[in-house]
Image 1 (tube, each protein chain N blue to C red):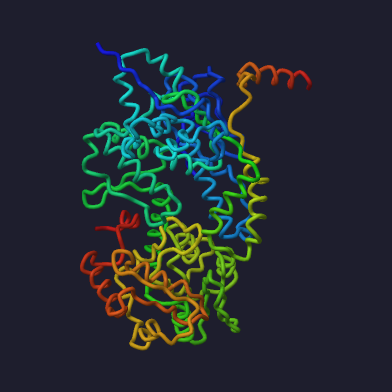
Image 2 (cartoon, rainbow over the protein chains, first blue to last red; image 1 turned 180 degrees about the vertical axis):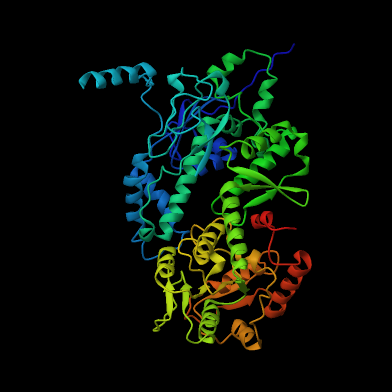
Length: 138
Length: 453
């Protein structure tokens, strides 16, 4: 049986990171061109500004994870989409809206927990002990 | 925002999955720590692997109170929510992104639309090694050809549950459902279990699926109407094409036609003003019930009937019947415009007046002068619309355009895209078409289940 060898095109050194729509500085021009030509480009553009991608080993080892956008990202997002929206007297300005979204929305969303900390489920015994203590007090 | 992700928690506050799985791999642990009811989890137990569950992220994004919300705020927040939803989908199903980055050959767009992981099922090598090194998810469910009835059924249920689709309150059970056991199981779980929230009812050998609450309100509504009939009161449901000013003109005429009679008017638009103590105007259901408790038996006029669903109208008719005080109304009139619901959060089932007023001629108050106001170029209207012909704009959308003007505004100026076609002719053709196709205004409604056929 003939072995099938996949030769990826030379795309420079890895890993490359795509953070909030921006490629890391070590990305080669060939890699940027390949990314733009691929179907991944519109997909990641739809995820701006929440997505963080790490290209470790092409073609398969690509890791997608959630990121918390910075204030600059949120401002950019608001200016991109705010121009398409109708304003009304309740909207003061777009930068104020961006600040509001950042403090009240973006900073309240956490994805990914503390992975070293084991998950503790409250079990039946826990409630029994608490109940016994409660009864013993009275 | 309902996000289709992987979760092991069947309900909010549960600490175990439905299979009582308690062990988890902490390295694959993701959650959203917000006001959302259900955190986002990776599968906890083997039975849950790869099962899709609905995760409600609607509590995640904090918004100011509705009166302080801007339109731009709403729009941008919706875009941000959509981006978060897409990102979480990609995190849970990374294979779509991996295949999208096919730098050697280029991935066709249709290839990304499902069916990618099915290719991996035929992989004869070490799947564990591939899974540990790559981002493939072999357990993803896909819609296969045999499950097409299931997918259609899920879409129909989603429409019933969507609060922004007020007219979707029931659907006919498809004929091909018996070919797919999964679809039958879904129907059984949704319609025969207590917590399913839906019921199946029949009209003329056709089975329909209806939400339980809508069914309940429809039953109350029909019971109220039958009780009014026992008191020799025949409520009138008046649907007509026109503006708000025409609606209020008709209301004025009706009130003035009965001299020295007491009236209770339900006007949620708060534009009716009377300096007479024989007319009580209520803006909401609380004021309306208060008016019934305090006044003697009166004639009742309900305006803006086109914004009521089964819930609102059944509450109003309960009061009108006098179930709470034994003081029924003398006569009942419900008036509305021929319009879709125009509220931000429309009531499910609205406009139910189209069902009860289905035999009314919506152009009966329309004379040549009214048409002239509709089409005149010289009018100083603040609102102007350009209307595309069918199917982009049907009669209901044109009626909704017309109904959006406030009471003291002139007619909205409406022009056709094709200048050679007069608007009047176009609208009349649409109406004739609607009459020939459906016979009446109303589509099948849950109230049909409680009338004799």
